[in-house]
Structures are given as C-alpha cells and as structure tokens.
Length: 262
Length: 262
DNA sequence: CCCAAGGGTTGACGTTACGTCAGGGTCAAG
DNA sequence: CTTGACCCTGACGTAACGTCAACCCTTGGG
Image (cartoon, helix red, strand yellow):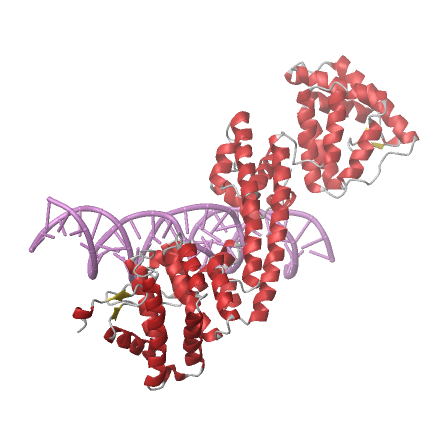
C-alpha cells in the first residue's frame, strides 16, 4: 500500500493537493494505519490520476466531481465539451501571441487600424510628431466612445487630406507646436492666416453640401472642440475670428445667417 | 473625456477590474469631476489596454507592473519571455488534449503500456474480468513504487505466460473468483490441485536457476504477497500447503533445505 | 538510550484577481 | 419628482491550493 507522498508523487500532484481533494470530498478518505497515517490502494491512484488530468485541463474541481461520479455516457460527453473548450483556449492563446507581438513592436493597440493609417499619412505629410501625439490621443478618446462609427469618420478625414489647404493647415498647427510658440503671446498675423485658410476650406465644404453632417453625436463633437481649444490659446483666437466672420462651432461648424451675426 | 465604464468597455475589461488596478497602483488614479467621478484621458486607455493584453496572456499583475514601468529594452525582453511561456502553455494544452482523449477511451492512464499489454494478454487467454481488475490494481501499486523497473518485470511475466501450467493456474484463480467461491469454505481438493501445479512450476523454475532473483526489492515483494493473501482465504491455504512441502514465500519463493522443514 | 531526520497529522491563515453585495450619492429623462 | 442608469467606498466571498505552526511516529546512528 501507499503513503500519501507516494500516491501524490505517482500522480504528479502535491501532498497538499491530495489533502485538499479529501477536504472537498473529491477523493474519498482512505483507511488509516495504526498511527493515523492514510494508506492508499490502487483505486485511489486511478481516481487521483483522473482528477489530475481533468484539473490540468482547467476543469473546475466541482465539475471534475460531477464528471467522475456520473455514468460513462455523461462522462464522455463532458470530456467532449472540455476538449472543445481546450481547443478554444488554444486559439485564444495564439491570438494573444499576435497581440503581444504588436505590443512589442510598439503598435497602438488602443487604436483601430483605420486611425493608425490616418496618423501614418499625417506623418508622411511632414507633420511634427508632437502634433501627431495630440491627434492620436484625441482619436483614442473618440474611438473609445464611438467604436462602431470610427471607420466612417476616418474615411471622411482621408478625403479632407486630399485638399492642399487642409494639409497646409495641419503644417501650420504642427510648426506652431514644434516651435514652442504655444505658450507665447498670440501672434495675430499667423492666427489670421490660419483663420483665412479655415474659412476657405469651410466655404468650399459648404458649396459641396458637406457641412453640418450628423456622423458624430453631440457629445463627441463637444469633446473634439474641447480638445482643440485646450491645445493652445491661439486656437481659441482662431475660433473667435471665425465667429466674427459668421461661423459657429468647430468640429461641426455652421454658417450663421448674415443678419444674426452679433 | 471618459467615465470608468466607457474606459473599461473600450479596453474590454470590467469596471471592477479597473478599480482593482487602481488599488494595487497598476493604473494611476485619474482626476475626479465635481461629484467625485473618475475621468479618464487617452493615456489611461493606452495603459489599460497594455495591462489587459498582458494579463490576458496570463502574466501576473505584479510582473505587468514591472514590465510597464521598465525601459523599452527590458520591456521587449519580457515580452519575448512571455511569448515563450505562451508557446509552452499551448504545447501543454495540446498534450492535455491527448491525455483527455485516452481518458475518454477508458485507457488506463495509471498504468505504463507494458502492463496494459500484459493485462490484454490475460484477457485474451480467457481470464475473467473480475480477476483482471485485481491484477490491474496490484500492478498499479507496483508501478507506483518501481516505475523504472516495471517494464523488466512485465517482460518476465510474459515469459511466464509461455508456460501452459501457468496459464492453467490463472484460469483456476479466475474461475474461483467468478464462481463466487472465494467466500465459501475451503475445498481442499481444488486447493491441492492448485498447489500441485504451483509446485511443478517451481521445480521447473528452480532447475532453470530462475528462483530467488533480485529484480524486485523487499517492499514490493511484501506488497504483492499481501495482495495475494488478501484476495481469498484459499490463497492462504495454498501457501500453507506449499510451506509444508518445503517452499517459503510466494512472490520470491525459496526452497527450504529438507532438514529445516518444521 | 537518546537524538536527529524525515516522514505523517490537523488547523489556520495567505495568495491572486477579481466577483458580488451593501449602502450610499449623481445625473438625464419623462 | 421619480426612475433608471450611472458613480462612489468598503467589505466580504471565491478557487485551488501554498505555507506556516505545532505536534506525533518511525528509523538509523552515536
């Protein structure tokens, strides 16, 4: 007959585990010898190996209990299920490996590919990294709130970039940050230049009937506006200039009828 | 900005998990709004997704902490290690699947193949299942104690089965059990028949110099003897008859010099 | 004969990564 | 003004053991 450590050793589990199985009634308590030691027979070995095999497969002990105390049919059915779960788990781990590789490569897992593409295009246009970080963070927030629509929004952004004025606008904003001018007093000449470009873009967009679309909901629009204003006091100036010229808003900008400009 | 549930939802974790990460200092506590709600920015999203990806890979949170707060080199090195562990885990699960399949097929995971073969041969010889279960359990115990030598022992057993007298012995023991005679009073005629056969076998073995070999150690020998005696009172009778005829032991039986038979 | 080493015993608290209340406050909508 | 869907903190629950502590039994050596 076997002592507890011999039993455990043969099944490849720890002594503590065996005692735990006793405690929860998964493995029946065996006879004791004259000095109170547990002594095991062959049936305990068989049972323990079954337990270990199932536990190793990630099956909760409660379910192991059910399976081992059930009929042969229920048992094999259960094993089938567990095998299916195992295959699913293996696929999940293989997936995790891929995500891990992207993490190591510094890929932005927080962003959908469409946004990453867009940012790459900005970089390709010579926009400063500092500004791209700003955009990236903004888009992370937007993507977090409208994951379903983010691809459509990005498609729109790509169209915008086909316009050379828009490209110039990005460059200006970018240079502005890179030069460290964000904290310096407002230089009205450059601000007006920016406002001019934005207005040209807006007029063109208005003609094409592209203004005031409802792709984004109000919350997101407000979010983007806030991000824009926070980025630099100059941005706020641009907004006020545009307001004087009859535009309202930013992310979803609108023409104000001439008679209502204050 | 994002609320805790928006953050959690986007990263694919629960709100409770986020709060847990705050508690252990894995994700820094963000600013609060006027009513005490946590408000998150983009950096929290990035960090949380990194945490989630690593945690999903089975990395303990303490190690996630270390990795994320370390330099880029240590980080990618860590990812390499984790990927290696993931590959190992996948292999382990694939292995578990195989063992599971054997479990479902009713295969005896507790026994080395050589013993399974031996038992199959017994079954093939017409030995009753009831007796085979007895043998199986005995061999499980033996295999548990001398895993290294079990194959050699089995080879010996196979040789034994080449002897028709040995086969007849097994059949008698088997029928004896199957007939329910194990609990009935000892029938000396059949016991003597068994003893006769055993003695013939012993004499033959002694001539071939096969007696008293040291393949098994004392403990195992005692174990097998005990199993044999427990199996039936008749077995004990056979032993005592053999003892009167000058044999001592069973599993490792010896000739007693004629002048010392009591 | 005693002693140390190496088994065994029970009992109880520690660990990991959260889940799940309880008992509140807040906010937008009808 | 209530209702439902959020948010907050605090605290206990869970699974499957790990890890003491404090004790008993057995065995080989000086």
